[in-house]
Amino acid sequence: EAAAEVLGAEPYNKDALRSAIEKIAEAEGKLKSSGQAIFLKSVEQMTPGERRALSEMWKKKRGRLMRDRPSEDKAPPEG
Image (cartoon, rainbow, N blue to C red; front, side, top):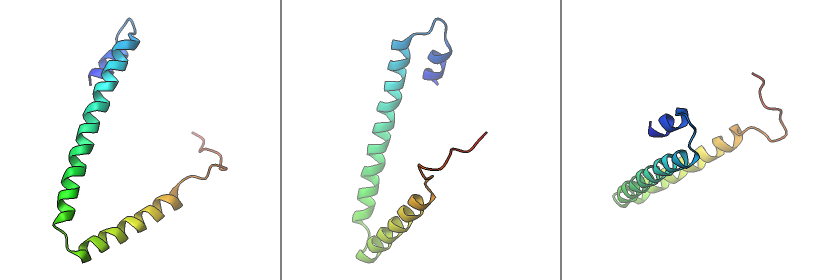
């Protein structure tokens, strides 16, 4: 919210916006690191079969994501 306030303020302050965005990025990085730590701890509790099942889900999800990606040679949707 702070970044949105800075963005809409007059006069425009590039340095203030950069600082606000850097704070957001730092907070997102901390959140991501925490999530990764929780995930890794959870994986330690899994059986080999559960880890294999998760691995297969990831592979299938990756395949779907790659198939659903827009082709670079396609024109972007109009709108």
